[in-house]
Every structure is written in structure tokens, then in C-alpha cells.
Length: 170
Image 1 (tube, helix red, strand yellow):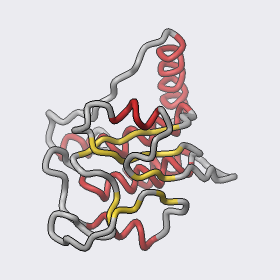
Image 2 (cartoon, rainbow, N blue to C red; image 1 turned 135 degrees about the vertical axis):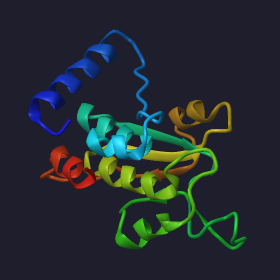
Image 3 (cartoon, helix red, strand yellow; image 1 turned 135 degrees about the horizontal axis):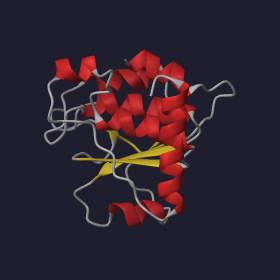
Image 4 (cartoon, helix red, strand yellow; image 1 turned 180 degrees about the vertical axis):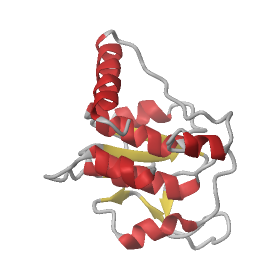
């Protein structure tokens, strides 16, 4: 998606699928090695890929499901005093540094890739939620507007260019 033609084709494909009422499911190619991902100029994780697609199609909301309830001030598995953060209005360097902990037990990216995704999605103007995917009704709760997980408020930059974020990732 580095060149304009590829981005335009991808955006048109997603828009057509959405127009048809389809729910596109996109997944990074987990079955190939990290070396092959580098050769393909791939993102390497689904969190970042989903944020890029959210920016590409002008999504209003991106929901990332994980095995954790959202963003905490520290790793709640090792620090019982870690505090839950329910809303992030501005994603600053202090918050981005909170992603330097361990990876998720069920995924490949951990909090670092979720915070990178939040940076991209919110810059594109989309709200983003990190929530626990083990709750069967999590998406319904979020779509009903209930406070669930950590909400990152979309703050569309006046000069938002998706390619700037894509090139930084590759």
C-alpha cells in the first residue's frame, strides 16, 4: 500500500464490500516468517494493519480485541497497583511508552502495537477502543455506547497523510 494506485485499489475494494453489506475480515499473513514479511514490506501485526485500513477507508471507530481489558498504567499481571485508563484524549510519549511491556498471551503484538494503531487511527480521525475479547458481548456493548475498554479519542490532524505512517512502519 505504499504507492497511490495500490492504496486507491484497496480503498475502492473495501468501500465496495461495505456497500454490499459485507464485513471484511483482514489478517496479516501469520503463516510466513518475519524475514518474508520484511521482503513483502508487510506490517507484521494485525493491530497496525487494522489501523492503516481504518485510516484508508475513513472509519469512525476501530475496535481492537485482546486478552486484557484495555490500557493500564503498568502491567496488571505483575503490578496489582496498575490503574486502568478508561479514556485517552491525547496520545503522548508518556502513554506510548506504556506499551513497552510483555506481549499478549494470545497475540503477537502486545500493547506496543495497539498504541501504534491508536496513534494512526486517531490521527486519521477515528476513535479506537482496546477491549477484552473474551466477553462474548463486547462489540455490542461498545456499539451501544457503553464505557467498555479504553477509548482513544479521534483527533484528526489537519495534515494527515496515511502514507507518512505507512512509510514509517515499513
